[in-house]
Image (cartoon, rainbow, N blue to C red; front, side, top):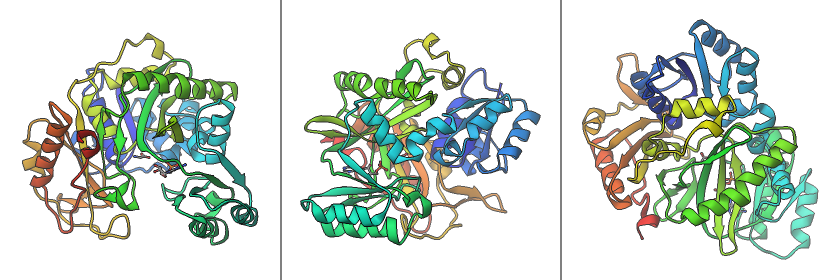
Length: 425
Ligand code: AMP
Ligand code: GLY
C-alpha cells in the first residue's frame, strides 16, 4: 500500500520512517519532506498548502492513506479534502481541528466536558481585557491569542504590567493578525508539564505512553520558548495510575464532548497538561502528534503504525489489540541553528551524519534540513536535527542520544545539555 505523509519536520520524518517498517507499506511519500525523508522515504515537491496538487498526486500514485502531520493544514481542512476525493486521511476534520485552531473553542469544550483546566475569561477587544486586568488583583496570568500563531501566541506573565503589554501586543499591535481577534486571560498554573497523546477514531481511545517536552530554549528551563528542544518517553511523572486518571477525566470526556458537538474527533489528540498540586489540568489540546514528542514515542512503539493509523481513519480502532512498546525509554535531543528561536542563517553543510548512523540504538531524525544542489545535507530551519536514542534506563538513553549529538557538527550547532534530567533526578 502507498502512503503519503504531509509535512517537513522531525515528526514527519519519524512518521515516514515508522510507516516504512510496516510489511504492508510499499511506497512512502513525504510532501515536501526534508533531507532525512529523502533517504528513508520518497520526497514529493508539494507543500501542505497545495491540496489540489496533493490530491492529484495521491490519485496518480495509488496512495491509500494520507497522513497530515502539522496543525495548519489540519485547521485548513486538508483531511476533509482527501476524504472527499475518496482517499483515506489520518487526522481530524477541519471542524474537529478547531480544538487546536481556536483556544476559545478549546476552553469552551473543556468547560462543557468538565475537564480540569485553568480558570479563564475571553475578550473580543483589547479595551475590555485591559479594564479587566486593571480591576482585579495583580496576580500572575497567561494571555493567549485565540488562533494559530506558530506557537508564539501564548504569553506567560508574572504581573499586571506584563499582562497589559501582552494584551497590547495581541489586541492593539495585532502581532498575530486575526489570530488575536479574541484574547484569553487565564490563571497561571504551576507544576511540571507532561504530554499525553491518544489515538482515537471518535469512539475508541488508545492512550500512548506519556512524554515530556522541553519548551524553553536553554538549560534549566531558561530563555525564550521554542517549539521544543527535546523530549523523552515514558515520563515517570505520569505513572500508570495517573495515566488511567487522565484517560478517564480528560481524554474520554473530551472525545465524547466532540461527538456531542457533532465534530467527531479522529486522529491524535494531544493533551498538554500541567501537573499541579490539585492534579493534572489541561493547558491546551493539539490535534496532531507533538514535535519532538512523536520521535521518542515512535522509537518505542513496536505495534505496526500503518495498522494503527488506518484503524483510526476507518473507525476500526476497537479491533486493534493493546499496543506493544519497547520497554526501553527513549530520549530525543534537538540540535538547533545558531540564533534560534530568533533569526538564524541557513545552508550550513552538516557533517558527521554517517558516523551517528553507525551508533546502535540511535536514530537521527531530520527537521530543518534539505539537500543542496551538490546533494549535501545542509541546514534549512531553526530546529535542524532530532537525535533520538533508546537505552536501558532514561539516563542511558540520554547518554546514547548525546553520543549521537557528539558525532554531528555544523557552523553554530547547539543543543540543550539537560534533556531528560527532570526524570533522572
Ligand atoms: P500552549 O500553546 O497553550 O501549550 O502554551 C504554551 C506554553 O505556555 C505551555 O506549554 C505552558 O508552558 C505555557 N502555559 C500555557 N497556559 C498556561 C497556564 N495556564 N499556566 C502556566 N503556563 C501556561
Ligand atoms: N512539542 C510541542 C508541540 O508539538 O506542540
